Length: 400
Image (cartoon, helix red, strand yellow):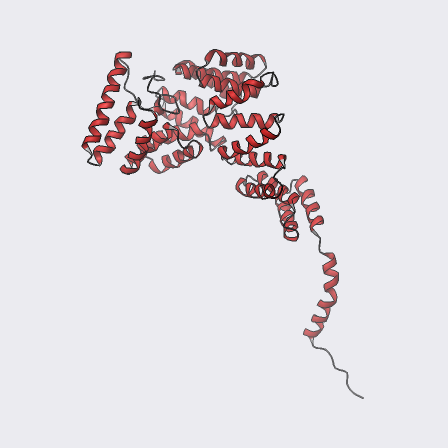
């Protein structure tokens, strides 16, 4: 009787694996099941689990825009804005008419401090849906952060009746008007905020108005009240820092700017002025990080260009300083301190003729200043005047 052959262990395992394969294939979830799991985890607060499920669904079906959109939202929840932006843009590349996805993209860009890009997306949202008040106000806020106060007034002014009683509207309009030195019109919005229960915002705007008038001593208590009442109010600590800096309280100002940056690492004023203070303290590397961040928000702002020029000059990078300071005096030809620093840069490059020319312009501007305001203090530069950009027409403003 022949002895039956016993299959080897490896053969048994192979047979078992092949027998199980069809059952396992059937058990694997499809894209729909993975997407549904992602939604459930997302709603339950398990954002990392949701991301894994959405990504698995996309592996099964890379064209699935609902999974990609939700993946963007999950990354926003984690503060990973750059990754969220990639996914939102991929959705819009396939379905460009998705207004909600475009708004979500704008929010991710805004939170990621890519304010100019956020504004571009919000313009498209508002053009398609003018009744989207959230998009309109966010766009106005972007314009305000970019220093374009005229655009804020142009955007919101004609729609005042629609936003009657809206405190955010009043704050944005009031801020833009005051920064344009339309103080009487801005005061009406301050009064509206006081009447509507927005006292912290009203005190903040009062502080801004006093800074614009050059009265930092009067601005200080208003800004301190705003910070005490509502410390999370955007830009409150930055404005407080500006008033303190203009009054010579450098350490207190630096602390206020750091408080603002702890809440919003991309606040323009805090990065600009803290960078200038750090430059004066010869902490050049740290100063450069803050000034570059300010530059990303407003690349052509004369205050940023001046501060970067001064930093490059302090660091011995004379040619970089010269180029920036030439731009400053081209944009603000009456800005005396810009000419002074540019003359220094020229002298260091052994260009005596150009240095003498800039020095002569600076002396002429100094004489004009003194004739208008006898006994005025020396011009200390934009960072000491409580202003984001050079304003040579108001020498001595903001110093007490």
